[in-house]
Amino acid sequence: MSTPDPLGTADLLPLAVAIPLLGAAVLAVAGRRLPRPGRDALAAVWAAADVACLALLWARTAPDGRAVSWLGGWTPRGGHSVGIVLVADRLGTGLALLVAVLVLAVVCYAWRYFDEPSGEHGGVFPALLLLFEAGMCGFALTGDLFDAFVFFELMGAVAYALTGYRIEDPRPLHGALAFGLVNSAAAYLSLLGIGLLYARTGELGLAQIGAALDQRAAAGHGRDALVVVAFVLVLAGPLVKAASAPFHFWLPDAHAVAPSPVCMLLSGVMVELGVYGVARIHRVVFAGAGGLPDAVVRDTLLAAGVLTALVGAVMCWQQRHLKRMLAFSTVGHVGLFLIGAALLEPAGLTGAAVYVAGHAGAKAALFGLTGVLLDRYGSVDEHGLHGRARELRLIGLLFVLGALALAGLPPFGTGLGKAVTEEAAGHWGGWLPVVFVLVSALTGGAVLRAGLRVFGGLGAPPSEHPEVAATTGEGEEPEIREPGRRPPAPMLLVPALLLVGCLAVGVVPGVGRALAAAATAFTDRAGYLTETLGGPGGPAPAAPEAWWTASGIGLGLLSTLLAVGFATAAIRRDPRRGTGGLYRATVLPLRRLHSGLLGDYVAWLAVGLAALLIALTAQL
Image (cartoon, rainbow, N blue to C red):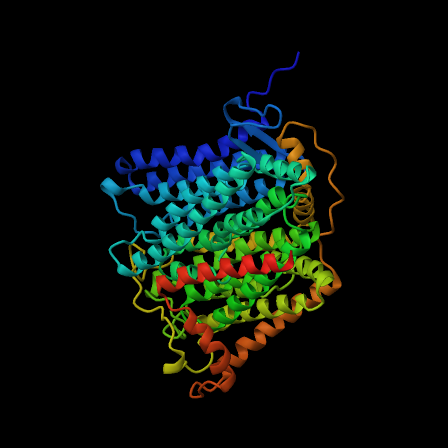
């Protein structure tokens, strides 16, 4: 007689959200009574427990299947349910696992870094990190549109608090307000779209809404203006969170003022959740007969992805504030992820998934290394730090490796993700690989230029030009306990391990194969609806290849060589030379759009949504 499993696979889904929630509560209560090492150790234990839970969930979920958990046992009756459902396929679980791993890395990185207050407020920072983790994991695992909004708001509210953690300084407060207000406005637009869908279908579950729209279409009531408007409104929140142009303005402002460990999470995994939300909501709710045609959605999202990638890359090259530079690099790469997701096929989504996994390691490592500069010199300004960090040879080497990874150098995971995505994109538009190469070269080249100047002292010190005035990284508030000290071991070890993780994504064949199978199951809409609503799922289509090809290696080397060329040209450029006519005609207006004014950002939110609505309706 077999013994019942005390912890079934379905039980792991709510547990993955409950563990960080419980850990946050314990830290908030016990943190004020514990010394700093005790608080750090306690936070690491809770973070590691969630990693173990999600790793077990990944192992127990079939590559082409899903784990479904109806909280409280409120299972569907006749296809309808009022219960809360969590649904885990391999892609959602993998993203939640990435969240948990990065949170654990950030907790370890901040062991001896962050100058956290003691006494009554002791333990608040790690508690907020765990609360942030709960919101992100819940968003990745939910199967309900309203719950997605709740988790979206939870992770947003905590992210605002973490961004403005140094509330005594007006700059973090301003950045957190811009972040909070723009994202909250978009979230409530999403809630309005959810209300429209509920009014039309009477359902809130992703699968139930999709099935109800399909049933209306089968009865002769196809899509109408309400469905199109609901699609635009529901996607407002995820698109703003993903920092897709023109909804991206809040991102560099928030990164510039947020503590370095927080930036590791914002760029490493939070904005990627926005792209995941766009893909999940479209695939389950709107990809059926009652939704929008794939061709219309594909063309619209492809245009948004290309615009985002180019804007991010051009603005990244213009920055001297290292955190803003890395933030705009994230915008550029999010555009490439969005292109992969917009292809609406397993190959493109596979490439985007591999790209996200590699990018998380490289970008979090670069933010961690930038935190070392802030720790050591109280500055993150490329010009002001020129040659000052020559003594930090190992950190400089890691920084340069991170820059090359961003450029797509094989065999880093970023290079493999770029290769798989650009090959899939090339089947839809022969010019799209050019975008991948250009964006990778500009973003990687900008970071490489900064690394060579700061850690190598190469080239003449840059001169100031009034017409290209930029936000500097001088005069930053310390985040540390002992400014100018020797960098603690975790601040070196964690970025190094993150870069090793980025490399592992590109050299371990099993990673690509697993993500390819996960992406294929993600696109199986019929299987998702059937398994969520209580039926057996069918076999998923064959997964695409996710490994290096000769063209992928060649384009990766090309983008890396271009990045090195761009960086070398910038370093050797005569600092007394002014700007050219092309710069004043194209780049300067783009820089001026990033005004830092909250009213402008909200206006661009309205303009972007209107453009999205017009683009969709014009194609129907």
